[in-house]
Amino acid sequence: MVLLIPQFVLAKDLGLLNSLVGLVVVYAVMNLGLNTFLLRGFFATMPQEIFDAADVDGAGVWGTFRLIALPLAKPGLATVTLFSFLAAWDEFTWAIVTLSDQKLYTLPVAIRAFQRAQATEWGLVFAASLIALVPVLCLFVLLQRQFVSGAFVGAAKG
Image 1 (cartoon, one colour):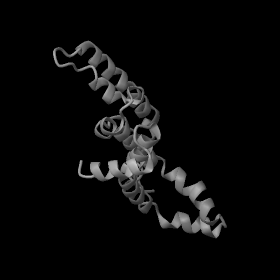
Image 2 (cartoon, rainbow, N blue to C red; image 1 turned 120 degrees about the vertical axis):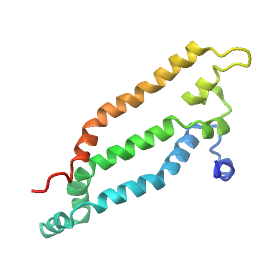
Image 3 (cartoon, helix red, strand yellow; image 1 turned 180 degrees about the horizontal axis):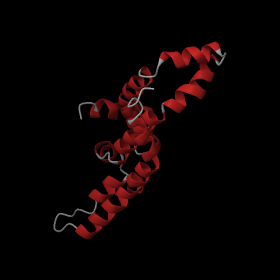
Image 4 (cartoon, rainbow, N blue to C red; image 1 turned 90 degrees about the vertical axis):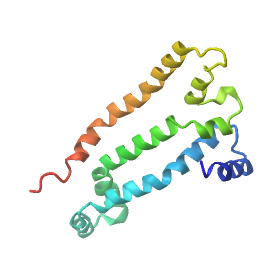
């Protein structure tokens, strides 16, 4: 909330208000700090011996990253993907402030439109909330194997 006004002024200056591109850019930037923090910690726990062996084998920096570090980082990447998706999917404040065209409304803002001053249409609110839950559950099911494998990475040392 503290950054809402500066972000709004910057988005206005860059011409990103009332556009889906503006939403994507701001959502990506808002998650960048947490994602960097999580992935840095995840990469720091990888044993240096693996990277030394790849260097001796002549893999190079990019080869080591692509062939060794990224496959080992799948649980961390799955976590970052889920957190970023949830932060953007459930975000309400930035969307309600920057979008004025009803065709561009995100799902939380559209669900808010079902509230009326006299009577809220609860059936529509609950149906839309259920629809909003489906992509989150699908993403979690797709990434579930990565979470489980990441939970046991350091459990057994052999």
